Image 1 (cartoon, rainbow, N blue to C red):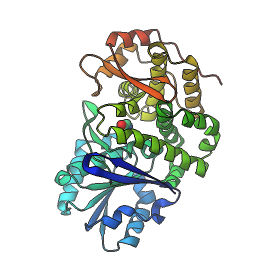
Image 2: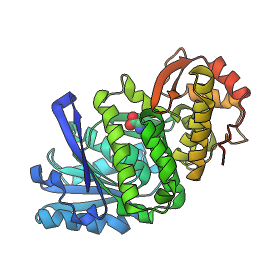
Image 3: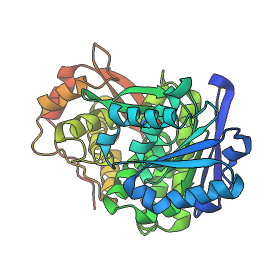
Image 4: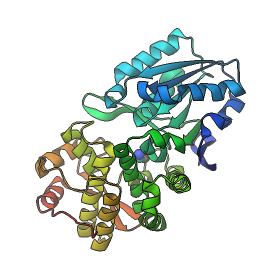
Length: 370
Ligand code: GLY
């Protein structure tokens, strides 16, 4: 097992991210050592709870046999990240007389993690929660760093809070049950963190892609450990995204627009981010003097993991720019983009609507060499 400690100045807090095979149920959930409550609610979806809920329950009961544990199981999918689900969970917690020292566990992917974290942030002004991510995307990105949210009908993640988990437990065995398309979608976030923050990790991915694709256990453990360590370093510097944390949004401004216009669920978040990174790399060639060879290597690596790299033919540049303007991260004057100057080094810059429109209008597909 590999372990990372993420330390934050605000509230002087820190927590462990534990990564390994077979952690559920064998891992001694360390948050239980300091747990003084009497109830735990595991929040999950119908598919994931069938696979892992009993194992999580067993792990807890082996250490603390007298804790009451209940499952709150929801429909799988982005539509569950809603005010209705938030309210349904709150009703259950109030009915069960949940106290401030009780605990929530998020068992699932990004939807379950974001919703559980947001509920934990709000219930009685904040209770503890633990992340047990079961998708690659949640393991390497959304379960780490304390961003929690639900969607509003007018936009994704519009209602949210920064609320850090008490522990993140990543059992790489969960990846065995993950559909290939979702594994690929998670790889987009792995490639993103390498491209913006660590050239040698990018090179490792280029050299080891076949081991990762064949789900070699030690390659997966290393890759997830590295992704989480890099993300932890960024979050430790800027927990509340006042500055450098924004680089984690590389590919996301274009990506969110593509996701929004295609209809959520039609294009997976990671797939949209993959296309977004290719567009942002092309823009970096023009605006940050990025060597065109790096863009080609990015395209080639994304293709290795079966990720899309081309803009869907049915979207035009005006639609994309208008959708980008709706992104909550944009300031009034312009659109904020993350560009890369070279592998492992990202910058944050604002651009006018016109300059992005012109770029998209003249955009030519960046082909990776095969
Ligand atoms: N997913 C980007 C962040 O956590 O900041």
